[in-house]
Length: 375
Image 1 (spheres, one colour):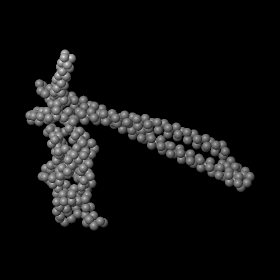
Image 2 (image 1 turned 60 degrees about the vertical axis):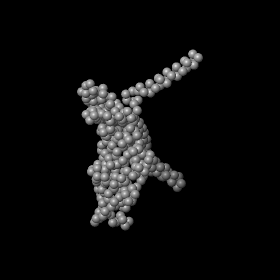
Image 3 (image 1 turned 180 degrees about the horizontal axis):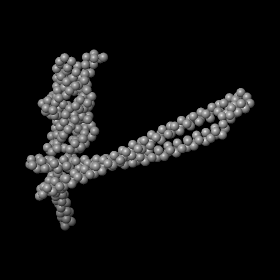
Image 4 (image 1 turned 120 degrees about the horizontal axis):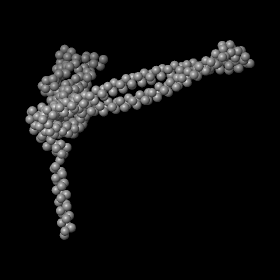
């Protein structure tokens, strides 16, 4: 009986302990996202202004740390390449000297024999067959000498080339080291400025440090989701063509004007339920990609990269209304470009301008008669 009661007590204690440890969590990393969302949306405008400044500084410092890491990797790579080139230079120098020595010995032999020796070799032939053999032998000697000269010349060129590569790599290494020193100094200054700013907050320092940690952690998690969503959206946009009726056209003399409503772009997104909730919004001069589930907005412009497509260039962004640093935005795209091809609609014509209006974009194109008739 006592044994059974002991087991029950132990099980009860384990359950209680599990419950407590599940709910007593760190102020940042253990909080459910709903609680984090509530805390970040519940701050005042004044607190948001302070936190925005701290968040920008934090992103800049993180960006500098990543830049330092990349520069260090570049320096290591440069050092390895320099060592490889030094080995190549050493080999080329040895080959060059070896070939020079070979030519030197051949020329010494020629000098000892003298020009008369060749004539004697030919005249002392016993027969026509012997004469031909001796002539061929002399031709081979001359040919081999010429080949040796060519080898030496190529060796010299190769040596000069590898030495030039070495000089270039050494200069590149020097530049990378300067960049690294600058990055280390910038990061140090940013950290010092951030610490000074936190100290100036006095009694509120701990409050803002806690909220900054919450914001950083939230962005770390959400940033991955946003980046993956952008990657998928980039793939979808690059693979799909706009329907032919998506553009409303009007014509004037050798000019075509077209408009595309933001709904057309948003319908593409809606057709792919695997994408999280997001939508494009057009306001005069600005194109915005809104991702409400991730509390993220990206704003920018449209450019015409090649005369037949549109590319969304993000110039600014925010997370919970707090600005994102340019490096943070770049990392979201991971080198991907959000490009929409309009070739099927243009039918051989080239885009001249694109202008973002309220709720739609306006395109102009010069009518290409030759393009339309296939010339």
